[in-house]
Image 1 (cartoon, rainbow, N blue to C red):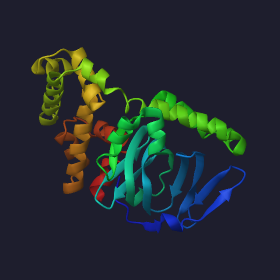
Image 2: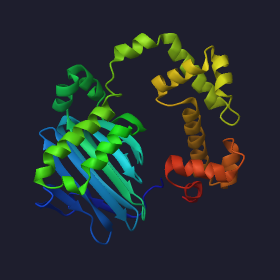
Image 3: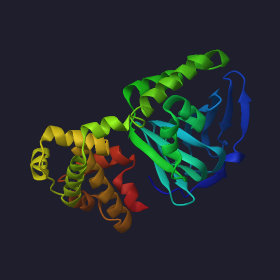
Length: 316
């Protein structure tokens, strides 16, 4: 996603009004910036739902500053398109279509960036620390906020139950005060689906895997990092680190939340992105650099991974 060079606007300057029909606070984009709005609904004392639908006519940065007495956890489901948050300390969070991103913070200062002519639909559920303590216990909630600042707690594909519940929550039939209870129920379904992996009992993980398993997983990933152009097969990689294919896939899922191929793809795409951005080389050169024989296959994989074409990255 390219850096935003278009308009900037403060979040506090976005016009807002209460929509009685939909029982929500609505923040709308100015007409000269694009079409879109964010609908904000308070579902519980410590649970807020924000639905955002934007199509901007020029690159847009929305400057925001959130000061909260209590730490907040935000679960963002990317339903369409891509956006990015850049914090004042250089923190960067990319919200991708098909992924759930979970962030934790006490305060947040930065800008949310949107690209022109690229529709974005996102569903955010903002939770207070008391809500987390109520459902998951004080120790697990405290673990998320112990580091302070902005923490990216998780970024993984949205689970099917969470995706279904999200679409039901956003259905027009759930709008209005009469639908609040239904939306609350769907929000709880989403949180149960998306937070379960994050708050999984650590004792289960430690019982299945030992310190040596962690070393094996790290060694396998290091091999993929070093040999991303001509990587070994999963079978060969398993032999080199002293395990079998099934166990290696389990280790990658546990420690990296991905498959060996998924980790390799991420390494290749990140290497290609950095090369394109720093050297502005031809797409074919970047494709060859990360081990793709055909530039067309590389471009398709790059677009699917980042949501933008490699050519657009090389131009900016």
